[in-house]
Length: 111
Length: 112
Image (cartoon, rainbow over all chains, first blue to last red; front, side, top):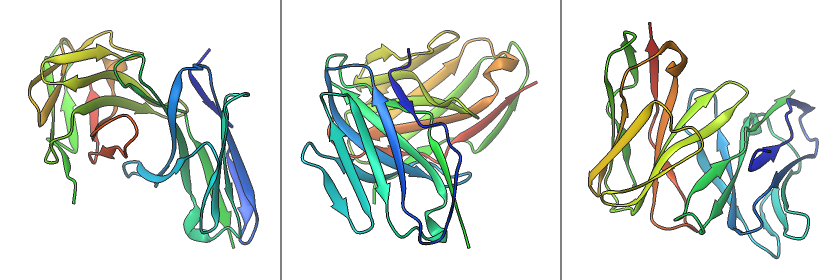
């Protein structure tokens, strides 16, 4: 089983739609969680961290469920510029701080 | 601005060649990583380093080795390049486990 698994996608949504991505992780010792965004032919960049209590940044909301070992990302009022691949990232400390990515979920927002 | 620089954007090498991919960061980060990214498979961890001369295997270390002689530089070595190592290689660095990671622009390696 992969350490980090994501919805395979692709997601094709109209502008203004709300879309949600999920990501599950297998290691209960995982300590910190992030969502990264990767545009076509570019390197990944941090979108937001995921905190235990959940956190919001404008149209983006991230949630963590430790009991079920998953994180989620909700995008409200989708914009054309949200089209990208979204990667969840799970960090653990037990193995000297490795950092593992999900395979990514591709989102296309259409006019 | 944090900068992570990879030595080449595009590289073409022949089967059996020894290949060096270099990554340099300018923010005194402790952790550095090498990933390869393939369609449908996402980023897969090859090796990471949490300090100078320290390294840990990731998920797919076979056919690769790494070197970290100085804190700012992390090198990925393909001992004998094979066609199945054709991929996009991404280097990343960060301070500690709970901090943002910064990526280089990637190296598109083609082994012919």
